[in-house]
Amino acid sequence: MSGIEIHKVTAHIGARVSGVDIDRPLGSDTVAALREALNVHKALVFDDVNLDDETQQSFVRHFGDVTTAHPTVSSIAGTPNVLPVDSERGRAANHWHTDVTFVLNPPQATTLRSITIPPYGGETLIASSAAAYRQLPEPLRKLADSLWAEHTNDCDYAVADEEVDERQAANRAEFTSIKYRTVHPVVRVHPLTGERGLFIGGFAQRIVGLSPGESRKILDLLQTYVTRPENILRHRWSENQLVVFDNRITQHYAVDNYDGQPRRLHRVTVAGDVPVGIEGKASYSIEGDASHYTAVAA
Image (tube, rainbow, N blue to C red; front, side):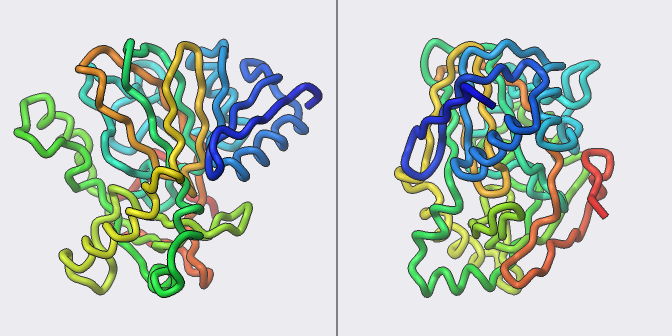
């Protein structure tokens, strides 16, 4: 672990890590230090990495099992655990979301590696839902503590709001080829730190017990705390970078501001646990089997 350096990027989220070669097997002390840094800072940036798809997966396995690329979206050919986040395939995720919250046990962490970077734009925004929860006024916090929300992939996340072209229609058909509906606590307790965070984002479509209209108003109100500028790391990509963020207590957004130029990242995710609310109750599935994507721990 000697030589590892961790420097904060913003007050509430993000740190830059140096002094460790993540393309090589890591010792237990180094892994523990990186895990602690991720717990504290929620997102870690590694510069000048020398990774390919295989070594990216090897690094991810230091944190846990690797999921397949996605429950419905195709992986890179011959590499079932790597998802191409590619502008050429129409996958600019320009919506605030936490990865794959429509399944029972969403990934605990996400890694993104830069492959092709546009000359300008294309940033990834990562927000701390823990900071957002801390900033809620007490009446809102008490309300959020009591709420559960249904998350689904059958929503507008997969397609932009403007007129749908053939490629967008095909992407949506793939994205929703298996329909998932899962109920999660609006306030999730982090299993390692005990922190509370707002577990909502783009896949959260309805508050249990409320109408769609009522749900939207409450979800939008809570979301304004997540996306406060002071809670956001705005990461401008450069070549040979890897970013890791804790998917249990963050949201992210890919900014579509690069005029359709090529932009490609490779995503590998760490299998996660079933979310638990403040009273110890776990999430539950309504529809959709994701066992081909990630196993649920006994």
